[in-house]
Length: 307
Image 1 (cartoon, helix red, strand yellow):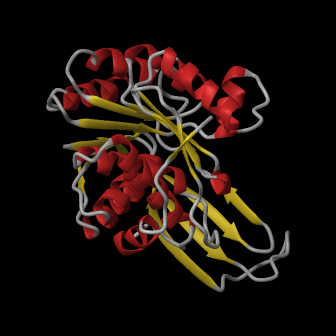
Image 2 (cartoon, rainbow, N blue to C red):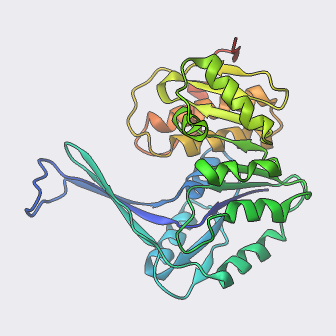
């Protein structure tokens, strides 16, 4: 089974406003409302690819109700912990001549809520996947990912971590199954300027030396580099297409790789599926659909060694 964790889910309100003028009343030309959050994105893409998952995390208030309702409409299993105070955040994405985002705060998550989450982890079994994605709310300990990895150590659970900086670095010693920083985040982790694929692969291998089993470095339109457990780095170019919406592309790559791995694909084939899935999301208004992923997958070459 695949489980995703989104500590701070959201309702994403997307509004198109032509000729937006600051300080005046503006009217939308189009609007939409979607459930959001990195783990939730992964669950939605997995569903589109035909795989079931269970979305874990915290919700509160009427906005939490709507997040659960919208996921139920998509037939995605959820087991959110309901908080008694506050409400799940609303993120506003204003699309005009320039795109502007206003992200909400979300509810406070106390120790009682965390204890309930750890109790949920007891149902995970050997071979299951647990995807930890996104930032940690200010109301939670900064080392929460590290604590979760330590708690689950030795149980044979495939932990996937899609985070940045110390959130990621501190969990490496617990040997996560997959990590997926982008090239800019990789450079920031080691405080270096990365030039060329060989150098990117070199620093990806350093993350592996620190404990990560599989490492994907996404590079947007420049493709992606994958270092599997055997340490032999490979590269895939990005499929050709027009980028429509890059939000969720990284989450989709994680979903694609996890889907491939869970279905028994060889690591390089799971990597190809990840690249195709991430690109399919980038080339569409919404998250990747299976038919679009399969179309892109057929255009990708075999991964080539990074030399």
